[in-house]
Image (cartoon, rainbow, N blue to C red):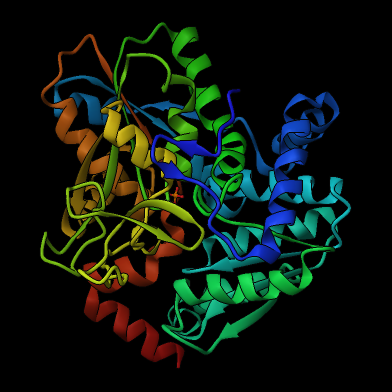
Amino acid sequence: MNYSQYFGEFGGRYVAEVLRPSLELMEKEFLDIIEDRDFWKEFDILSKDFTGRPTPFMFAENSTRIIGGASIYIKLEGLANTGAHKINNALGQVLMAKRMGKKRIIAETGAGQHGVATAAACAKLGIPCTIYMGEIDIKRQRPNLFLMNLYGAEVIPVRFGSRTLKDAVNAALMDWSGSFEDTHYLIGSALGPSPYPSIVKTFQSVIGKEVKSKIAEKKIDVEAMVACVGGGSNAIGFFSPFLEENTPRLIGVEAGGKGSDRGKHASRMSGQGKSGIIQGYKSLFLTDKEGQILPTHSISAGLDYPGIGPELAYYGKTGRIEYTSATDAEALEALQFFAKNEGILFALESAHAGAKAIELAGTVSKDKAVIINMSGRGDKDIFITAKLLTPDEWLNFLRNEV
Ligand SMILES: *Cc1c(COP(=O)(O)O)cnc(C)c1O
């Protein structure tokens, strides 16, 4: 692996002076780990027995027949323990923290998916865990707070600023500036100051490696691989073994939300993202003229974020990764399509990739294949999907519960 702090103009390490030594130490540890067979042996055993790897790689036969173009395959990453790819990174970083002699894990969470994965990994590996979560997000995502507590994590409500993800990150950073000697800060996506983007990519690359071996085994002629992009961790992990090659096409799907108006989406690569340095790294962000972060919208909490991981921004500039977006409505449509035709429930995030993959498959010849990364499963979304698809019945159900 060729490690660098920068990806073209993006990346870097823009942090307060106090945090610099701990990031330097983390970088050193990370470079050691890459070569350490014992570390990877432990990671592999836990990935198998705890996470449930390898996750299935499924030929979507019915969908392929209905669309009538390229063969559609789905990497069922959502069948991993805790329901999404986030566990790969959480597990890897907790193992790394223990190797560094850390006694405590902290993390930020938005919708709660990263918090749940972190709490589960900490429970498995027996290390105390504190999760920062905005007060507004706690109100919106009560089930995930319940799960984090079940896994034994302490969840601290963030009551300042936006009271959402952005300030949960700030609260975690504040904690860390006073606690880094014995505490590891576990970032949940392929972003943040170096070396985090590379650490997260490395632990998520297990997805792409499994897919690559299936492609070889089944002798599939792949036209494109399609993944949704929030911060970018599932996408960079899924794409990683192919980034240095010229094929197949790699397609990142951002949240098109309710349309291209300012504040209504989270499409940073659509041309609206501007270069900036926010929360420790340089990348493309949705900001106003003064460089302040703009509000974003997506039906899926995981894609509702103003920034994109630096390496993903870089590969967008070079053209290796193509970007497009799917709207809320398109994602909801794709979710129903795969549920009905494949018996597979996509997370709303992953359904963005599903929507664009269906569109693409229809334009590609039958001897080719399109592979979708289903980053998560959609059980977590029923409070959103049921409310949208069957509003009256759902309301009645909630009333009866109360
Ligand atoms: C968090 C999440 C995402 C978005 O995060 P990335 O870092 O872009 O992968 C996508 N899908 C699911 C299911 C998630 O939970």
